[in-house]
Amino acid sequence: MILWGGTGTGKTTIARVIANMVGSRFVEINSTSSGVAECKKIFAEARGELGLTGRKTIIFCDEIHRFSKSQQDVFLGPVESGQITLIGATTENPSFKVQNALLSRCRTFTLQKLIGADLVSILQHALEVEGPNYSPSSLVDDDLIKYLAAFSDGDARTALNLLELAMNLSTRPSATKESIKSALTKTLVYDRAGDQHCKLDTFSTPFVLVTFVSFLKPAYASIVTPFSGRNPYPFKFRTS
Image (cartoon, rainbow, N blue to C red; front, side):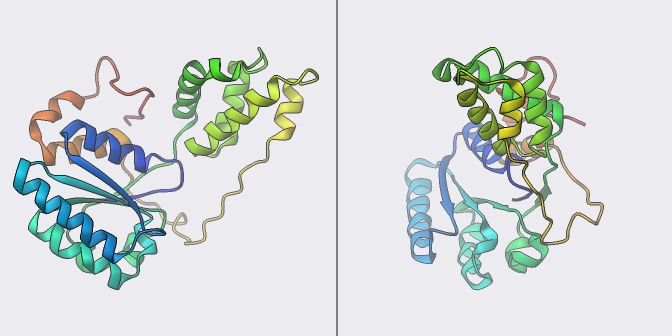
C-alpha cells in the first residue's frame, strides 16, 4: 500500500499500528539513507524469516518518492512473490513519483489533514503522559492547547513540537500566555506539487487500518470494526 499525505498526518503511525496488530516483523527504511544493497539484504532476511517461522515481514519505506524509479524496481520481485508486504509513505503525488509497475501492485490511500478536534485530543494525551517530565505551569491549559491545535495546520508533529516548546516557555518566571503565543512561529504551507487545487477522494485513518488489516489477517478486522466503544489507540481518530 502507498500512504500519500502531508507531514504529520500519521503515515508512520498507521504502518506501525498495522504491523503490531497483525504480528508481522516490521522493518523501517528511509529512501534518503537506504540503498538498493540494503533493501536486497532486508529481502533476504524476510525470505529466511518466512521460511523458518512463517512470519511475514512488513517493510515501511518512508519518503519512497525519493527513490528513483529504477531503484524502486528492486521492490517488484519481493512484492510480487509475497516475500514482503510493502507500505510506502510519500508526500508527493504517487502517480508521478512511484514506478507504474509498483504502483499497480499497491493500493493508494490519500490521508487528510487532521482536524482541530483530532489535534486537541493528541495534545491533551501528550500533556497527560509527558507533562510531568516538563512540569509546565498553569499557562498550558485547554485554551492554549486549542490555540496550538489551530496553529499547527493539521500537522500532528508540528503540534507536538509546539506543545513541547510551550511547556518549556511556561516555566520562565516572566512568562505569560501572550508571550508564549508570540514566541511560536507559524508553519507556512506551500503546495509545491500543486495537488491541493484538485478535490481528491480521501480516506480517514480508521478506514485505512480496517481495509489493510482485514486484507492481511481478516480475524483482526473485528478488533477495529466498526470503531465503536472504547478507542484502542491513545488518540481519537476521525471516522467521518
